[in-house]
Amino acid sequence: MGSDTQSARLAYLTGPLATPLGPMGPAPVASLQMRPPRSDARQADKQVRNLSAAFDAFSIGDGAVLSFHHHYRNGDRLMNAVLAEAARRGLRGLTIAPSSLFPVHAPLADHIESGVIGDVVTDYAKGPVTAALLSGALRGPALLQSHGGRARALGTGLLRVDVAFVGASLAQADGACTGRGGALPCGPLGYAQVDSGYARHTVVCAHEITQSPLPHTDIPGDKVDAVVPFDTPGEVSGIASDTTLPAQTPQAKQIGGWVAEVIAAAGMMRHGLSLQTGAGGYSLASVPLIGAAMARAGLRGSFLSGGITGAHTELHRAGLFERIHDVQCFDGAAVASSIINPHHLAMSASEYANPLESLAIVNRLDVMVLGAVEIDRQFNVNVTIGGDGRLIGGPGGHPDAAEGARLTIVTTGLGGGGYAKLVDDVRCVTTQGRHIDVLVSDEGIAVNPARADLAADLKRAGLPLFSFDALKATADQSATRLRCAAATSPRLLIEHRSGGLLDWA
Image (cartoon, rainbow, N blue to C red; front, side, top):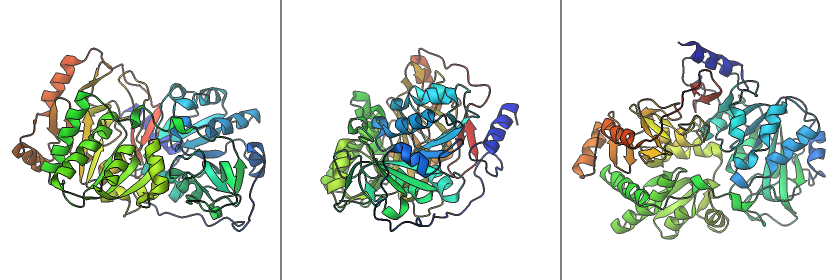
């Protein structure tokens, strides 16, 4: 084992999630341990004046672990406000555990440089803050988890949160809250549900506090310790972003059409189909094309799941699927559906993807459609580091759904930003190739050699099959830029969804 890999292993062992670690792969299985209800669960009024009062009430000091959700995505305002209060108090060495980071969180870079933030554990990161994550200013490498891996770490006590800050559009004085109501709805609070279940303390920061019954309850009052009136915890205009918008190009239509044909040729286009499409322009662009194929065949699927867009809700409205399982909304149309549609069901991140939940939704998927920054000969996928070496994403739900689904399809163009996206070896492994069945690109389709049965099915259907090397050669010919040199020491650790170190960058 090389010294850099040994260094990454040591960083993982001594980092914010110091856990037993065997060979490069999953750690020993632990059990979920739900935190009991708060001792003051019946308290009718848990309101405190402001964030400063919440810091005082729960003695937030140096070295505290604070968590946040990303349901407002690039519209989030709460995390910046909480960290500004920490800086005002002169706190140092905080560990932050947001479910994701976005360009709006650029102010966190200064808090990393100043030492207010000492460690970062997250599932996804994009925007100016990513340079600070890779700068060496943290106490050790930042840790990236999958959505399911985060839920597992919280539930087993490997990630111990002192205070979970939950932005909510609407709450009651006793702490019960929702993202499906009020003036600034963001949809179900699926990630915050897990945080509130395991954190030592939960502080709900609500745009509106009402005495009326909530239209929905995402987090019950017995999981909440305090309620802070907080003007605009998130801007709803920031929920939809580039990765949650379907591509509208001829290439996207070509890829989407082939995705539908792959599903049919694999025998999955049938009554009862369960489907998820991950963030990414090509994968989301396949949604209406899959729906059109189902409509032509007179089929009705069982459920859609994951991050939900208006395209998904349209398929449900058209009667093509029985229900929707939603952990987060990707746009306003999905938010609206989550409020009014009784068959649009909220789920927690644990119910969605926790590897310790045998009935997790990802384990009940027939088909998963994903994107890729890079894919290699072993069908390993990188959705974390770009060709220029920048951090541009992270695991999210990618490895969770890829492992759980019966058929996992990766969609991508052959190139992006001048870089070839088909490579000999990905810069870092986000999702292991053994969980990827087929690649659908704008120039043709390649099947994982481990799936000879699938290759035979697609060949019989007359689909444009190529070897991976043939598509890679085309990608190389069109590339205008070479990847920058890889990091020589770990700046970023990628955790296996079941625990343990998967890779580093």
